Image 1: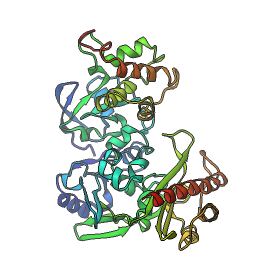
Image 2 (image 1 turned 30 degrees about the vertical axis):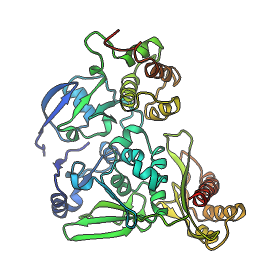
Image 3 (image 1 turned 90 degrees about the horizontal axis):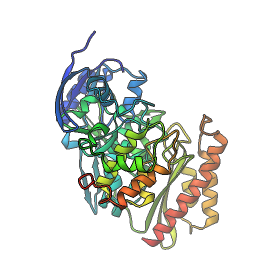
Image 4 (image 1 turned 45 degrees about the horizontal axis):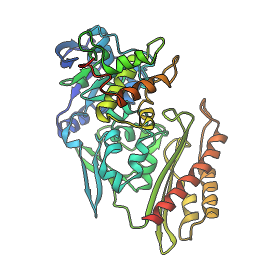
Length: 288
Length: 165
């Protein structure tokens, strides 16, 4: 790690004001479960490290039946995994957390940090995307909210400007008769993921009123599979239609070959995982 | 330029410490280089292997991936703080009884993960245990014996009670 000045923040206002002063000379530290690896490898060398991990006003979870969930950016993965509220209202999130890295990483790492790090293999983005989540960004100049589906720009790049920080994740209340599921594949469970797929299915009178599918590790960003979604919408869902949607998602994916898997294998996995996630989401929608 | 060192207050294995450190070090560096506590191991340093696991305010963390300055005001427990005097911690005794290590390099991390797990969930199922120990890799003994050792402690707390011996 190269040298930097460490600045521990007590308030959001203080953090925003320093960020607008130091801009790209500074990096924001939350749990640092990804950032520290980059620092240790000298892949980044900020002059200032602005530590927001201990700002109390960024650590909360509020739920309202109409408004849905608002979660501070510093909510840890472990908090999501253990939350009785989330287990009841957004089951897919605690379920997904069980396969996010390891307990140690989930204990210290934050949801906001993961999203801003924008590693396309991240597990939590696809379920959050199909849940129609938005993220709130704040700076000394004001705030804005962005749909998570439009948040990621490229490998490790997001729409967050150099004076902004992600302060809140917002998840709308689930409509009636809606099911959500996430499926991933990795050769060992705590290992590098090869592909992941999340699906949301909303039913109305037996027809698929709405469907969302999001993929991870098969494109530069966590991506929506829009064509696959279109295949499902407005129709009575069955295995054949889900198979078609899975084929479409595999065609939309843009995977690379690396040491973990070939692009061809990843595409094949998308087919399998979308099928599994969509079937599970459908079952859950029917049961809800 | 040489950046100013910073004071940090941290309680390690029950002992309050006040140290002047460079800000660009990890909690693992602090333990090993400043306090001479070499139980937590430096191995992958990329948040993967778990050999550096310690307990920070009750939570297992990989100390190679926590900035030392973030431990300010916290309580850290390392493998050196597990035993009470000459009396080994139940988990340490169980690891010996079950021959749950060979080279021992991953053992301190495994012990600390196991302790954090049992503190939170004293009666885990074997499935829960396997899942929660995923973050600790072993490259020689394998993964069977230490699971048996930890399950033994969970199922027979009295046998392993540090006080009753």
